[in-house]
Length: 118
Image (cartoon, rainbow, N blue to C red):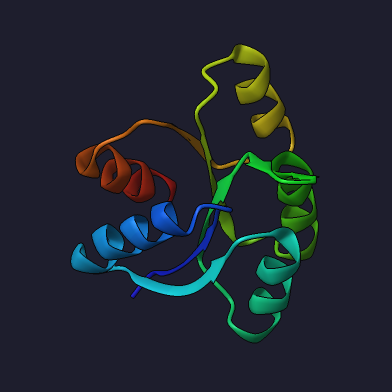
């Protein structure tokens, strides 16, 4: 079973993502609202895939992405963003993102993006 970590500062979005992913047969092993929670959680519970928001209060998801890829090079990262700008996509890819999912998205788009990355 694919183990997924969710990193987003919105508890409502994390809860919705968890419900959709788990009802589709994935296992959500970690929910984090910031980088510290994410890295502390990954130390205890490794994940196959991280859904990572780009913007967090006081920190950059793209900086977190770079650190994730350095520390956990085999972990796939799907960047989730509401910004449909080429520079965000290019920067995410440069820092090691395995895919990008643009908000808003529906259930089918989420599952398709996860399946493409894993």
